Length: 278
Image (cartoon, rainbow, N blue to C red; front, side, top):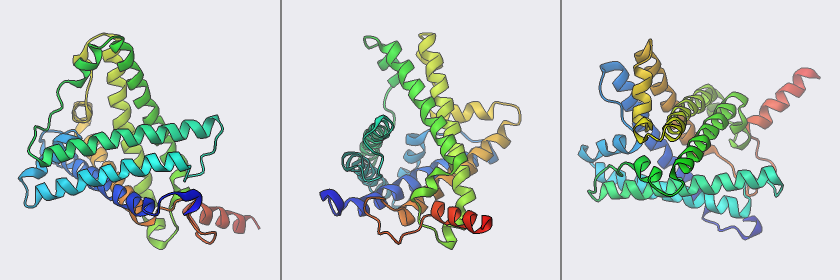
């Protein structure tokens, strides 16, 4: 592997994306069920906690938790070795720092999922109250909220502009499922953006109760006009995001490790455009 990056990076990446696919498949399925039957909306940990009561649920939680830790390790190694060719300019450094932050987040989520598998409580406490009780906690909470809004905006752009296609190998399957992947990014962006907006409001009002997790954000959508329809669409979108992660687990390339003959969806689209303009 180029630049002495460990040989296990690519397999670990595939395991990590598989785990993320499982997380969003559970969350999207429960969201769709809540829209259809009127049940309770769940956040990520609450959705995964449901697995404990299912056959082989604990084993699946262990696999998901370890997979998320693999995803975290992939993010950190990718940032260190610049495996995605982000570069060393300001934009590249920012993107690599974002990979590190993402790795830390998914590592923490992986640890919490393993705690679920070991029988610990699914709740992590009122983290917003704890955060805002820290020195400068109000401003920390506001910064986290703004960061989540930024993540939501980035994923919305990523889905709209299809930048994710640059790292996915073109096949008949990936081309056929591309619209579902695009919808997945949009749905994920909306959910993350709502959570970020509520956290900013909570910080500005110094009221932790105004902060909402993923489950509360989904419940908020259901309370809007045509809320059950919108919630159902979000559920389908989250399933699309699960599909996108599953596709990345199978077809994603690592730019610094891929051969010169590997063609991505983006490469294929550009070639088609050149042929059409010739």
